[in-house]
Length: 84
Length: 299
View 1 (cartoon, one colour):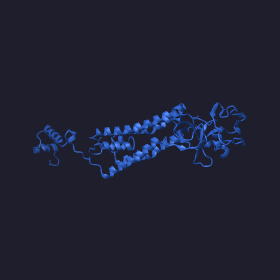
View 2 (view 1 turned 180 degrees about the vertical axis):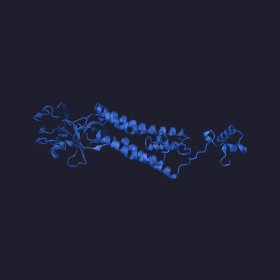
View 3 (view 1 turned 60 degrees about the horizontal axis):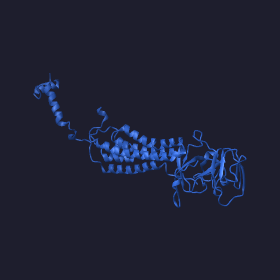
View 4 (view 1 turned 90 degrees about the horizontal axis):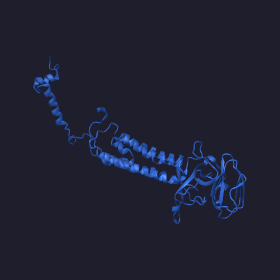
């Protein structure tokens, strides 16, 4: 049996990195706890970044345009047509 | 479940959420991942507020038109404000947020463009074309019924095969001006197809039946309807005798000697009659606001 055929767990046992399967599980769980703590405030936010200048400008512009559209919609039932 | 989420965490920004809802009610909710709420907020804002309430107003007595339109407007504003505040508050509670795969700036932009520039304008145009439309009159041709400076609602569900109401003699109606189809006029429908109308001085008859009396020339009635007219100004002694053509109506202004009506521009095609005046919602004169006219019913 070559090294490549050996079961990965058996290899770890042979290398002495773990003593028993239970120790292996414990090692993995400890590693998870270090890398990803349950306290979410400590987690890294992979996609959190400040808004770009363009997206802020687009948001402000769309708010202004949208605001006018909303006001037009609200007042739309009140804007009169002239009847002679 | 992993494939439903983009990788990483993206806390919601309350100001972004509020501004998005200010631009379009429901958009801030969409930004917060509240898909179902976003739909309901937008539907309530665009359909349940003004369109639905004005349709209900047409089923109720005319006197309730103005209060219900006011309620509809207030309801619409309330939903808008609720959307902004709710988006802000919910965004503050979403500082650990997994964005959905569809939560992208492109989707927000597309939703905004479709809803704000297509759906909302179409909804209000549809409401005005088919249900209720506001008008104002700058002329005195319909005094004393409609005063110069009156702003009123007209019901548009009028004079069509599926409409709630048909044209009747005595109706104060809105129609397309025959000599300029970009203009609307308001006059009283006096006679319908086949009627024989005679007008001489202050004596008006329809099918041989006189509408007023010598004792009360300014009170006319026909078919159970009664209205007031005005015979002030330079009197006309011309005798008019006509038979209303098929598919047409004969209209007169209530200010009989100061009105540009069927005596001058001819009979109005029935298909051009688009609405029936309902209730005054505002009135102003050179002397100021005529508060007593607000809520006055016109038909």
